[in-house]
Amino acid sequence: MPKIDVAAVPEIKGTRYPAPFNDRSTERVRQRLGDAGGLRDFGVNLMRLPPGNWSSQRHWHSEEDEFVYVLEGELTLIEDDGETVLRAGDCAAFPKGSGNGHHLVNKSNSTAIYLEAGTRSPTDLITCSDVDMMSSSTDGRFVHKDGMPYPDG
Image: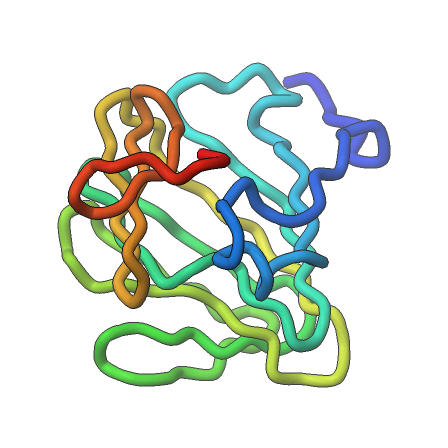
């Protein structure tokens, strides 16, 4: 099994969300470890979330399971049922099609590090729970929930 040189995996800062939906995640850093290892059926990302940042807009997937495992620090999981604190060694799972919007928020004073894993469905639809935005994995564009594209999406 080939070892992945994590230090050589490019860091991606922020999100591709159209403004103003990207404002809460500008300092989030993602390293696509699954891509670096040549994985095709599921993705694995090493995530760094500084204080005050969100992992994403609160969202759910129509056809992708998602899983997070906290390696370091403390994060607040926010979902339909409320808030749950996750610390190093804690994990959470988000089954596809649940309709339960979720995201992680770093309310602590230090950077949190976690692994994010998920399936890669070519027909997944990501729906944001709190804002008028969704995205299909078929084209990756962000659109309003009525299907109208965002100007920069």
